[in-house]
Image 1 (cartoon, helix red, strand yellow):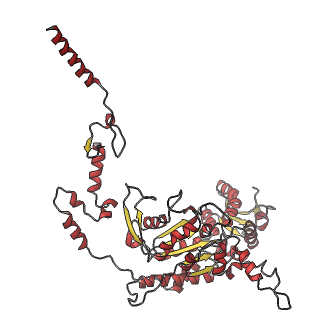
Image 2 (cartoon, rainbow, N blue to C red; image 1 turned 90 degrees about the vertical axis):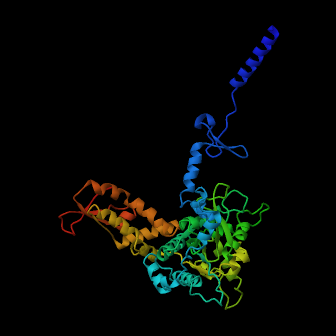
Image 3 (spheres, rainbow, N blue to C red; image 1 turned 180 degrees about the horizontal axis):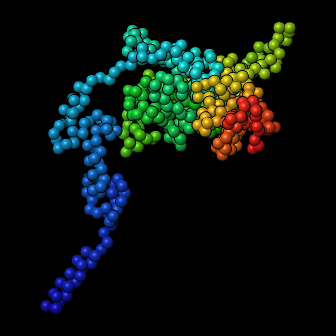
Length: 465
Protein backbone atom coordinates (compact mmCIF):
# COMPACT_ATOMS: atom_id res chain seq x y z
CA UNK A 1 0.00 0.00 0.00
CA UNK A 2 2.73 2.41 0.91
CA UNK A 3 4.50 1.78 -2.36
CA UNK A 4 1.39 2.45 -4.40
CA UNK A 5 0.72 5.53 -2.33
CA UNK A 6 4.20 6.83 -2.99
CA UNK A 7 3.75 6.32 -6.76
CA UNK A 8 0.48 8.23 -6.66
CA UNK A 9 2.10 11.13 -4.82
CA UNK A 10 5.06 11.20 -7.25
CA UNK A 11 2.70 11.31 -10.25
CA UNK A 12 0.72 14.13 -8.63
CA UNK A 13 3.91 16.13 -7.98
CA UNK A 14 5.04 15.70 -11.62
CA UNK A 15 1.70 17.02 -12.94
CA UNK A 16 1.93 19.93 -10.52
CA UNK A 17 5.44 20.78 -11.71
CA UNK A 18 4.26 20.65 -15.36
CA UNK A 19 1.53 23.18 -14.58
CA UNK A 20 4.04 25.50 -12.94
CA UNK A 21 6.35 25.50 -15.96
CA UNK A 22 6.69 28.89 -17.73
CA UNK A 23 5.24 28.47 -21.20
CA UNK A 24 7.13 30.18 -24.04
CA UNK A 25 5.58 33.53 -24.93
CA UNK A 26 4.11 34.03 -28.41
CA UNK A 27 4.08 37.31 -30.29
CA UNK A 28 1.52 38.98 -32.53
CA UNK A 29 2.49 38.63 -36.19
CA UNK A 30 1.52 42.24 -36.93
CA UNK A 31 2.30 44.39 -33.89
CA UNK A 32 4.99 42.07 -32.39
CA UNK A 33 3.55 42.40 -28.84
CA UNK A 34 3.71 39.32 -26.58
CA UNK A 35 0.68 37.40 -25.37
CA UNK A 36 1.50 38.37 -21.79
CA UNK A 37 0.72 41.99 -22.75
CA UNK A 38 -2.20 41.75 -25.18
CA UNK A 39 -3.94 38.69 -23.74
CA UNK A 40 -5.37 35.68 -25.56
CA UNK A 41 -4.47 35.57 -29.25
CA UNK A 42 -6.11 34.10 -32.33
CA UNK A 43 -4.09 31.38 -34.00
CA UNK A 44 -4.25 30.88 -37.77
CA UNK A 45 -2.45 28.29 -39.92
CA UNK A 46 1.36 28.26 -40.20
CA UNK A 47 1.64 28.99 -36.45
CA UNK A 48 0.71 32.65 -36.89
CA UNK A 49 -0.80 34.47 -33.90
CA UNK A 50 -2.74 37.72 -34.13
CA UNK A 51 -3.94 39.79 -31.19
CA UNK A 52 -7.53 40.98 -30.95
CA UNK A 53 -6.52 44.63 -31.48
CA UNK A 54 -4.83 43.92 -34.82
CA UNK A 55 -7.69 41.68 -35.88
CA UNK A 56 -10.19 44.46 -35.20
CA UNK A 57 -8.04 46.96 -37.15
CA UNK A 58 -7.98 44.51 -40.05
CA UNK A 59 -11.77 44.31 -40.09
CA UNK A 60 -11.97 48.11 -39.97
CA UNK A 61 -9.69 48.38 -43.01
CA UNK A 62 -11.76 45.83 -44.89
CA UNK A 63 -14.95 47.77 -44.24
CA UNK A 64 -13.41 51.06 -45.38
CA UNK A 65 -14.00 51.46 -49.11
CA UNK A 66 -11.27 54.09 -49.56
CA UNK A 67 -8.29 52.03 -48.48
CA UNK A 68 -5.60 51.17 -51.08
CA UNK A 69 -5.83 47.42 -50.46
CA UNK A 70 -9.41 47.31 -51.70
CA UNK A 71 -8.55 49.46 -54.72
CA UNK A 72 -5.59 47.23 -55.49
CA UNK A 73 -7.56 44.08 -56.17
CA UNK A 74 -10.63 45.94 -57.36
CA UNK A 75 -12.91 44.12 -54.88
CA UNK A 76 -15.69 45.82 -52.99
CA UNK A 77 -15.81 45.53 -49.17
CA UNK A 78 -19.18 43.81 -49.68
CA UNK A 79 -17.23 40.64 -50.49
CA UNK A 80 -16.23 40.33 -46.87
CA UNK A 81 -19.73 40.82 -45.46
CA UNK A 82 -20.73 37.24 -44.58
CA UNK A 83 -21.21 36.10 -48.17
CA UNK A 84 -23.85 38.65 -49.14
CA UNK A 85 -22.08 39.18 -52.47
CA UNK A 86 -19.80 36.73 -54.17
CA UNK A 87 -16.48 37.67 -55.65
CA UNK A 88 -17.73 37.13 -59.20
CA UNK A 89 -20.69 39.45 -58.63
CA UNK A 90 -18.46 42.14 -57.18
CA UNK A 91 -16.05 41.95 -60.09
CA UNK A 92 -18.96 42.13 -62.50
CA UNK A 93 -20.23 45.25 -60.76
CA UNK A 94 -16.76 46.75 -61.06
CA UNK A 95 -16.68 46.08 -64.80
CA UNK A 96 -20.05 47.82 -65.22
CA UNK A 97 -18.69 51.12 -63.87
CA UNK A 98 -18.63 54.08 -66.19
CA UNK A 99 -15.32 54.40 -68.05
CA UNK A 100 -13.01 57.19 -66.94
CA UNK A 101 -13.24 60.44 -68.87
CA UNK A 102 -10.78 60.68 -71.74
CA UNK A 103 -8.33 63.56 -71.85
CA UNK A 104 -9.33 66.58 -73.96
CA UNK A 105 -6.43 68.76 -75.11
CA UNK A 106 -8.85 71.55 -76.06
CA UNK A 107 -9.09 72.41 -72.37
CA UNK A 108 -5.39 73.26 -72.34
CA UNK A 109 -4.07 76.69 -73.32
CA UNK A 110 -2.31 77.05 -76.67
CA UNK A 111 1.50 77.42 -76.83
CA UNK A 112 1.51 81.24 -77.00
CA UNK A 113 -0.74 81.40 -73.94
CA UNK A 114 1.51 78.98 -72.06
CA UNK A 115 4.58 81.09 -72.90
CA UNK A 116 2.80 84.29 -71.87
CA UNK A 117 2.04 82.72 -68.50
CA UNK A 118 5.65 81.61 -68.11
CA UNK A 119 6.78 85.17 -68.89
CA UNK A 120 5.08 86.34 -65.70
CA UNK A 121 7.36 84.16 -63.58
CA UNK A 122 10.57 83.60 -65.57
CA UNK A 123 12.87 86.32 -66.90
CA UNK A 124 14.61 85.76 -70.23
CA UNK A 125 15.03 82.21 -71.62
CA UNK A 126 12.80 83.09 -74.59
CA UNK A 127 13.92 80.14 -76.70
CA UNK A 128 13.57 77.65 -73.84
CA UNK A 129 10.07 78.85 -72.96
CA UNK A 130 8.98 78.62 -76.59
CA UNK A 131 10.37 75.10 -77.02
CA UNK A 132 8.84 73.72 -73.84
CA UNK A 133 5.45 75.35 -74.55
CA UNK A 134 5.20 73.76 -77.99
CA UNK A 135 6.52 70.38 -76.81
CA UNK A 136 4.07 70.13 -73.92
CA UNK A 137 1.12 71.21 -76.06
CA UNK A 138 1.97 68.64 -78.74
CA UNK A 139 2.42 65.94 -76.10
CA UNK A 140 -1.05 66.45 -74.67
CA UNK A 141 -2.54 66.56 -78.17
CA UNK A 142 -0.91 63.16 -78.65
CA UNK A 143 -2.82 61.62 -75.74
CA UNK A 144 -6.05 63.50 -76.39
CA UNK A 145 -9.21 61.71 -77.38
CA UNK A 146 -9.10 63.74 -80.61
CA UNK A 147 -5.74 62.25 -81.61
CA UNK A 148 -5.80 60.49 -85.02
CA UNK A 149 -6.10 56.73 -84.82
CA UNK A 150 -4.26 56.01 -88.06
CA UNK A 151 -1.06 57.90 -87.13
CA UNK A 152 1.13 57.03 -84.17
CA UNK A 153 2.65 60.21 -82.76
CA UNK A 154 5.92 59.74 -80.90
CA UNK A 155 6.44 61.11 -77.39
CA UNK A 156 8.33 64.41 -77.06
CA UNK A 157 10.56 63.85 -74.04
CA UNK A 158 12.96 66.73 -73.40
CA UNK A 159 16.53 67.32 -72.26
CA UNK A 160 17.35 70.81 -71.03
CA UNK A 161 20.89 71.97 -70.38
CA UNK A 162 21.75 75.12 -68.50
CA UNK A 163 24.15 76.48 -65.88
CA UNK A 164 23.21 76.26 -62.23
CA UNK A 165 20.67 78.83 -61.13
CA UNK A 166 19.37 79.49 -64.65
CA UNK A 167 15.82 78.32 -63.78
CA UNK A 168 15.54 74.73 -65.04
CA UNK A 169 13.59 73.36 -62.06
CA UNK A 170 11.56 76.53 -61.62
CA UNK A 171 10.55 76.42 -65.29
CA UNK A 172 9.11 72.91 -64.94
CA UNK A 173 7.40 73.70 -61.61
CA UNK A 174 5.71 76.75 -63.08
CA UNK A 175 4.65 74.79 -66.16
CA UNK A 176 3.02 72.00 -64.12
CA UNK A 177 1.21 74.57 -61.96
CA UNK A 178 -0.18 76.35 -65.02
CA UNK A 179 -1.37 73.12 -66.65
CA UNK A 180 -2.69 71.66 -63.38
CA UNK A 181 -1.15 68.23 -63.98
CA UNK A 182 0.65 66.05 -61.43
CA UNK A 183 4.39 66.67 -61.29
CA UNK A 184 7.12 64.54 -59.74
CA UNK A 185 10.59 66.01 -59.28
CA UNK A 186 13.41 63.63 -58.48
CA UNK A 187 17.17 63.82 -58.27
CA UNK A 188 19.15 61.46 -60.47
CA UNK A 189 21.98 61.32 -57.92
CA UNK A 190 19.88 59.08 -55.66
CA UNK A 191 19.13 56.51 -58.38
CA UNK A 192 21.12 53.28 -58.53
CA UNK A 193 20.91 49.97 -60.32
CA UNK A 194 18.32 47.56 -58.90
CA UNK A 195 19.72 45.56 -56.01
CA UNK A 196 22.07 48.26 -54.70
CA UNK A 197 21.67 50.81 -51.94
CA UNK A 198 19.65 53.76 -53.23
CA UNK A 199 16.42 54.29 -55.15
CA UNK A 200 15.41 52.11 -58.09
CA UNK A 201 14.33 53.86 -61.27
CA UNK A 202 10.72 52.82 -60.51
CA UNK A 203 10.75 55.20 -57.53
CA UNK A 204 10.39 58.04 -60.04
CA UNK A 205 6.95 56.74 -61.02
CA UNK A 206 6.06 56.09 -57.39
CA UNK A 207 6.56 59.80 -56.61
CA UNK A 208 4.33 60.71 -59.54
CA UNK A 209 1.60 58.40 -58.26
CA UNK A 210 1.76 60.11 -54.86
CA UNK A 211 1.54 63.53 -56.52
CA UNK A 212 -1.58 62.34 -58.35
CA UNK A 213 -3.27 61.24 -55.11
CA UNK A 214 -2.84 57.53 -56.00
CA UNK A 215 -5.01 58.07 -59.09
CA UNK A 216 -3.47 55.86 -61.79
CA UNK A 217 -5.27 57.53 -64.73
CA UNK A 218 -4.19 60.96 -63.57
CA UNK A 219 -0.62 59.83 -62.95
CA UNK A 220 -0.40 58.38 -66.46
CA UNK A 221 -0.91 61.92 -67.83
CA UNK A 222 1.60 63.59 -65.53
CA UNK A 223 5.08 65.08 -65.89
CA UNK A 224 8.30 63.67 -64.43
CA UNK A 225 11.30 65.97 -64.07
CA UNK A 226 14.62 64.24 -63.44
CA UNK A 227 17.14 66.81 -62.25
CA UNK A 228 20.92 66.44 -62.14
CA UNK A 229 20.75 64.05 -65.08
CA UNK A 230 24.42 64.74 -65.81
CA UNK A 231 25.34 62.88 -62.62
CA UNK A 232 24.46 59.51 -64.22
CA UNK A 233 26.97 59.87 -67.04
CA UNK A 234 29.26 56.93 -67.65
CA UNK A 235 32.23 56.86 -65.31
CA UNK A 236 35.58 56.97 -67.03
CA UNK A 237 38.73 55.09 -66.11
CA UNK A 238 37.12 52.97 -63.41
CA UNK A 239 37.46 49.25 -62.77
CA UNK A 240 34.47 49.02 -60.38
CA UNK A 241 30.88 48.36 -61.40
CA UNK A 242 29.12 51.54 -62.48
CA UNK A 243 25.88 51.13 -60.50
CA UNK A 244 24.93 54.82 -60.51
CA UNK A 245 25.96 55.80 -64.04
CA UNK A 246 25.42 53.84 -67.22
CA UNK A 247 23.34 51.22 -65.38
CA UNK A 248 20.82 53.89 -64.36
CA UNK A 249 20.64 55.17 -67.92
CA UNK A 250 19.86 51.64 -69.07
CA UNK A 251 17.17 51.31 -66.39
CA UNK A 252 15.52 54.57 -67.44
CA UNK A 253 15.21 53.48 -71.06
CA UNK A 254 12.04 51.45 -70.49
CA UNK A 255 10.41 54.32 -68.58
CA UNK A 256 11.18 56.87 -71.29
CA UNK A 257 10.02 54.57 -74.07
CA UNK A 258 6.83 53.42 -72.34
CA UNK A 259 6.22 50.28 -70.32
CA UNK A 260 4.10 48.86 -67.51
CA UNK A 261 5.72 49.45 -64.13
CA UNK A 262 4.57 48.12 -60.76
CA UNK A 263 5.01 50.74 -58.06
CA UNK A 264 4.14 50.63 -54.32
CA UNK A 265 1.22 52.66 -53.03
CA UNK A 266 2.07 54.98 -50.15
CA UNK A 267 5.67 53.79 -49.84
CA UNK A 268 9.00 54.28 -51.57
CA UNK A 269 10.03 50.62 -51.77
CA UNK A 270 8.35 47.34 -52.58
CA UNK A 271 7.62 44.86 -49.80
CA UNK A 272 5.08 42.20 -48.98
CA UNK A 273 2.92 44.49 -46.82
CA UNK A 274 2.52 47.30 -49.39
CA UNK A 275 0.00 47.07 -52.26
CA UNK A 276 1.25 47.59 -55.81
CA UNK A 277 -0.32 49.38 -58.75
CA UNK A 278 0.58 49.02 -62.41
CA UNK A 279 1.24 52.26 -64.28
CA UNK A 280 1.87 52.59 -68.00
CA UNK A 281 4.52 55.23 -68.74
CA UNK A 282 3.72 55.61 -72.44
CA UNK A 283 1.81 58.88 -71.92
CA UNK A 284 3.99 60.32 -69.14
CA UNK A 285 6.11 63.27 -70.25
CA UNK A 286 9.73 63.05 -69.09
CA UNK A 287 11.86 66.17 -68.81
CA UNK A 288 15.52 65.76 -67.88
CA UNK A 289 17.75 68.63 -66.83
CA UNK A 290 21.31 69.17 -65.77
CA UNK A 291 24.10 71.72 -65.56
CA UNK A 292 26.65 69.39 -67.24
CA UNK A 293 29.82 70.93 -65.73
CA UNK A 294 32.89 70.80 -67.98
CA UNK A 295 30.69 70.18 -71.03
CA UNK A 296 31.89 73.55 -72.30
CA UNK A 297 35.43 72.18 -72.50
CA UNK A 298 34.25 69.37 -74.79
CA UNK A 299 32.39 71.87 -76.98
CA UNK A 300 35.42 74.19 -77.17
CA UNK A 301 37.71 71.30 -78.07
CA UNK A 302 35.39 70.30 -80.93
CA UNK A 303 35.08 73.86 -82.20
CA UNK A 304 38.81 74.48 -81.98
CA UNK A 305 39.48 71.47 -84.21
CA UNK A 306 38.04 73.53 -87.04
CA UNK A 307 40.89 76.02 -86.59
CA UNK A 308 43.72 75.81 -89.08
CA UNK A 309 46.72 77.79 -90.18
CA UNK A 310 45.95 80.67 -92.54
CA UNK A 311 44.15 83.96 -92.79
CA UNK A 312 40.70 82.33 -92.50
CA UNK A 313 41.61 80.37 -89.35
CA UNK A 314 39.81 80.95 -86.04
CA UNK A 315 41.75 81.92 -82.96
CA UNK A 316 42.24 79.25 -80.33
CA UNK A 317 40.79 81.49 -77.61
CA UNK A 318 37.80 82.58 -79.68
CA UNK A 319 35.31 80.71 -77.47
CA UNK A 320 36.99 81.19 -74.09
CA UNK A 321 34.81 84.16 -73.12
CA UNK A 322 31.60 82.88 -74.72
CA UNK A 323 29.05 82.81 -71.88
CA UNK A 324 26.52 80.86 -73.95
CA UNK A 325 28.87 78.20 -75.25
CA UNK A 326 26.39 75.52 -74.16
CA UNK A 327 24.01 76.61 -76.92
CA UNK A 328 26.44 75.07 -79.43
CA UNK A 329 26.09 71.58 -77.89
CA UNK A 330 25.50 68.57 -80.11
CA UNK A 331 24.58 64.94 -79.42
CA UNK A 332 28.19 63.96 -80.13
CA UNK A 333 29.32 66.24 -77.29
CA UNK A 334 26.85 64.61 -74.91
CA UNK A 335 27.99 61.13 -75.94
CA UNK A 336 31.56 62.09 -75.23
CA UNK A 337 30.43 63.48 -71.87
CA UNK A 338 29.12 60.01 -70.92
CA UNK A 339 25.49 59.80 -72.02
CA UNK A 340 24.72 56.60 -73.93
CA UNK A 341 23.21 56.93 -77.44
CA UNK A 342 20.08 54.89 -76.53
CA UNK A 343 19.27 57.30 -73.72
CA UNK A 344 19.76 60.41 -75.86
CA UNK A 345 17.63 58.85 -78.60
CA UNK A 346 14.64 58.80 -76.26
CA UNK A 347 15.03 62.52 -75.53
CA UNK A 348 14.41 63.96 -79.00
CA UNK A 349 14.00 67.59 -77.91
CA UNK A 350 17.26 69.20 -76.79
CA UNK A 351 17.49 72.85 -75.75
CA UNK A 352 19.66 75.03 -73.54
CA UNK A 353 19.10 77.85 -71.09
CA UNK A 354 21.16 81.02 -71.06
CA UNK A 355 23.42 82.01 -68.23
CA UNK A 356 22.05 85.00 -66.31
CA UNK A 357 23.86 88.33 -66.78
CA UNK A 358 23.58 91.45 -64.63
CA UNK A 359 20.59 92.93 -66.43
CA UNK A 360 18.69 89.63 -66.20
CA UNK A 361 19.45 89.31 -62.48
CA UNK A 362 18.14 92.84 -61.86
CA UNK A 363 14.93 91.90 -63.67
CA UNK A 364 14.68 88.70 -61.61
CA UNK A 365 14.79 90.85 -58.49
CA UNK A 366 11.85 93.08 -59.38
CA UNK A 367 9.76 91.89 -62.35
CA UNK A 368 8.34 88.35 -61.76
CA UNK A 369 4.98 87.98 -60.06
CA UNK A 370 6.72 86.51 -57.00
CA UNK A 371 9.87 88.65 -57.22
CA UNK A 372 12.05 88.72 -54.12
CA UNK A 373 11.80 92.51 -53.75
CA UNK A 374 8.01 92.32 -53.94
CA UNK A 375 8.07 89.81 -51.10
CA UNK A 376 10.15 92.08 -48.85
CA UNK A 377 8.05 95.12 -49.72
CA UNK A 378 4.92 93.21 -48.79
CA UNK A 379 6.41 92.12 -45.48
CA UNK A 380 7.31 95.70 -44.50
CA UNK A 381 4.00 97.02 -45.82
CA UNK A 382 2.32 94.93 -43.13
CA UNK A 383 4.19 97.18 -40.65
CA UNK A 384 3.05 100.24 -42.67
CA UNK A 385 6.59 100.89 -43.91
CA UNK A 386 7.44 101.66 -47.54
CA UNK A 387 10.59 99.90 -48.82
CA UNK A 388 12.43 101.08 -51.93
CA UNK A 389 15.71 100.22 -53.68
CA UNK A 390 17.83 102.56 -55.75
CA UNK A 391 18.72 101.32 -59.24
CA UNK A 392 22.43 101.34 -58.39
CA UNK A 393 21.68 99.20 -55.32
CA UNK A 394 19.98 96.55 -57.46
CA UNK A 395 22.95 96.49 -59.83
CA UNK A 396 25.31 96.07 -56.87
CA UNK A 397 23.25 93.09 -55.65
CA UNK A 398 23.42 91.56 -59.15
CA UNK A 399 27.20 92.03 -59.24
CA UNK A 400 27.53 90.20 -55.92
CA UNK A 401 25.38 87.36 -57.25
CA UNK A 402 27.57 87.03 -60.35
CA UNK A 403 30.63 86.64 -58.15
CA UNK A 404 29.08 83.64 -56.42
CA UNK A 405 28.48 81.91 -59.80
CA UNK A 406 25.28 80.22 -58.61
CA UNK A 407 22.84 82.17 -60.77
CA UNK A 408 19.54 83.39 -59.34
CA UNK A 409 19.98 81.23 -56.23
CA UNK A 410 22.51 83.74 -54.89
CA UNK A 411 20.02 86.63 -54.89
CA UNK A 412 17.96 85.31 -52.00
CA UNK A 413 21.01 84.66 -49.82
CA UNK A 414 22.41 88.16 -50.47
CA UNK A 415 19.11 89.88 -49.68
CA UNK A 416 18.61 87.83 -46.52
CA UNK A 417 21.96 89.09 -45.26
CA UNK A 418 21.27 92.69 -46.28
CA UNK A 419 17.76 92.87 -44.86
CA UNK A 420 18.44 91.11 -41.55
CA UNK A 421 19.16 94.23 -39.47
CA UNK A 422 16.43 96.23 -41.20
CA UNK A 423 13.77 93.59 -40.57
CA UNK A 424 14.94 93.43 -36.95
CA UNK A 425 15.06 97.18 -36.22
CA UNK A 426 12.01 98.48 -38.11
CA UNK A 427 9.32 96.98 -35.82
CA UNK A 428 10.95 98.73 -32.81
CA UNK A 429 9.96 102.22 -33.96
CA UNK A 430 6.41 103.02 -35.09
CA UNK A 431 7.54 106.42 -36.41
CA UNK A 432 9.45 104.95 -39.34
CA UNK A 433 7.51 105.44 -42.58
CA UNK A 434 9.99 104.76 -45.40
CA UNK A 435 13.25 102.87 -45.89
CA UNK A 436 15.51 103.38 -48.89
CA UNK A 437 18.36 101.00 -49.75
CA UNK A 438 21.38 102.61 -51.42
CA UNK A 439 24.40 101.28 -53.28
CA UNK A 440 26.72 102.35 -50.45
CA UNK A 441 24.75 100.24 -47.99
CA UNK A 442 24.94 97.19 -50.28
CA UNK A 443 28.71 97.58 -50.60
CA UNK A 444 29.17 98.12 -46.85
CA UNK A 445 30.13 101.79 -47.04
CA UNK A 446 26.91 103.33 -45.71
CA UNK A 447 23.63 102.80 -43.90
CA UNK A 448 20.01 102.55 -45.06
CA UNK A 449 18.16 105.86 -45.29
CA UNK A 450 14.83 106.17 -43.51
CA UNK A 451 12.08 108.76 -43.44
CA UNK A 452 9.92 109.28 -40.38
CA UNK A 453 6.18 109.64 -40.59
CA UNK A 454 5.01 113.24 -41.06
CA UNK A 455 8.37 114.40 -42.43
CA UNK A 456 8.70 115.86 -45.92
CA UNK A 457 9.45 113.17 -48.44
CA UNK A 458 12.91 114.52 -49.35
CA UNK A 459 14.06 115.16 -45.80
CA UNK A 460 15.94 111.95 -45.07
CA UNK A 461 17.41 110.62 -41.89
CA UNK A 462 19.96 107.83 -41.70
CA UNK A 463 20.06 105.20 -38.98
CA UNK A 464 23.04 103.07 -38.09
CA UNK A 465 22.92 99.32 -37.91
